Length: 281
Image (cartoon, rainbow, N blue to C red; front, top):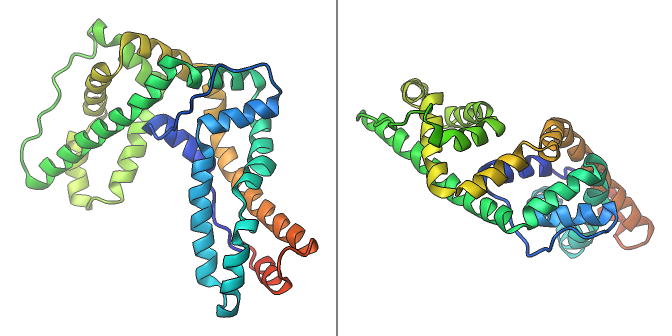
């Protein structure tokens, strides 16, 4: 069965860097076991929403490729196969509980539950929108052949020290390269060459420093620097490449196992189960 790839770890890093994270009204971390803390952490990151979207795409992908005589049965039983609550409790909570230490979970939960943490994450959406607007205007100027106004800023000015420290903590060089990689896939080569001459690393850093100064308070900058430079954040980000690959494999294995379990319990028609189990990959 072609269940698709659930890039949940990739979703996490996008949420953290591009401001897609959701927030909950959770209180400060309570004295509880690691499994409960992992569940709370995933709730704060709204991973269940990402899982739900991917499940919907999986269902549509499978349905399109099914023989006509199995489509009705799949629609009837697809919710049992792709049960979001089961997937979260039986796969993702145990899986991520092994990837993050309890001390790191406490750090994440404390940050996301605090007033300043909520404010920082909420404002990331504004920062992302402003960043996109800068890129959009630069691209439009390049296409029209008009002059592009470079941001006038002295990065050695002490007043920008906190914003620059935050960008260094977030590894802005890597983010900049990733952005260029995305843009290179949608922009013709001759325009991309001109774009790169204007949209330099210095141009990007200067522009985003001004944005950060407008959006974040000093208190928020301090808290953001503290969290994004913490072992809790760095340890997880360091593991991401392995986690992304591993969790995709485990997701496919889990769905196969779930189909077999439902089949054995008589909760899934034999013809549908047999077909889905044959369609591995």
